[in-house]
Image (cartoon, rainbow, N blue to C red; front, side, top):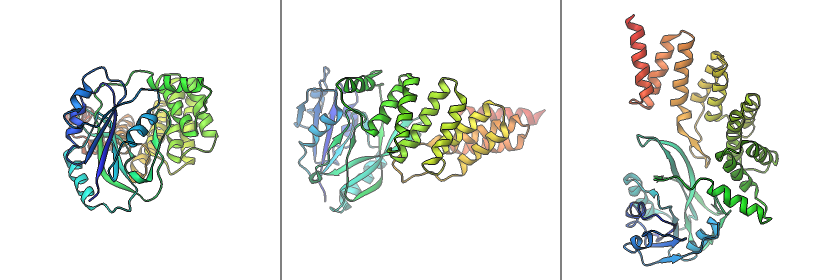
Length: 358
């Protein structure tokens, strides 16, 4: 059976780190904690789990801190988690089984990262991350922020999910500040770095700068397929926020250059026509969103609601606006199959019942 080192970088996580460690402590064989400057009781708390606690002076570089933690691992494989990550019980069972049965020729295990959850705990956003790495491969982290592990060899996708239960938002603008400092030092962004820099500009509402960076990224023709698609989706939001509807539609259609249409793009195109009261064309795009195959095995972002619940709800509204109540009810029922207790679904049911009683 393989052995596993858990490597974590932490700062001021006393309120959440026990939840994380309790969910993984009996699976891993070693726990390594790298503290990047806690001023709370984080280090005191983790002493109940490990004596392998190291201080690392923060230098605005997540990869440097993660590489420092990886260099201290001694087991066959290295697992990384953030302090607000957890393994739910079903995933713990799957992880135990993986540990018992995994062949030693596997170099990297990709696991789904469930990072978006609604109030009912349903997953709204997920994507695969490099998660369990063979130590002797010497993989290294790259990029100062939005870091990634450069991997090769035999890689498998696992059905184990890591659930991200964020308790507090990151300091506003933190990542953008790191990027700005990086650029001010005369350093150049990689193509991947340019994509994530553009996203940080968008998140911080620098829409014009984000548009410039997203277009520079796309025009390079060097981006990863999934980053290209997501750049189009985020760029469309930038144009929309600046009320540039024409370019919003243009860039959503451009996303189709990189792969088969994604439901996120189809729904946003549907909304473009919905806002113009062009319900027939909106219906076409919303129906397309429900009929295309979700890329479950890909490593890109998946916004799950765009593949069923959102288009079903929008189709309900479109058909209602066209006076086709039967179709409107049918799609509301489909939305109810996704989220039976959803407030909008329940409101629509009452609305349709009131129409039938007249």
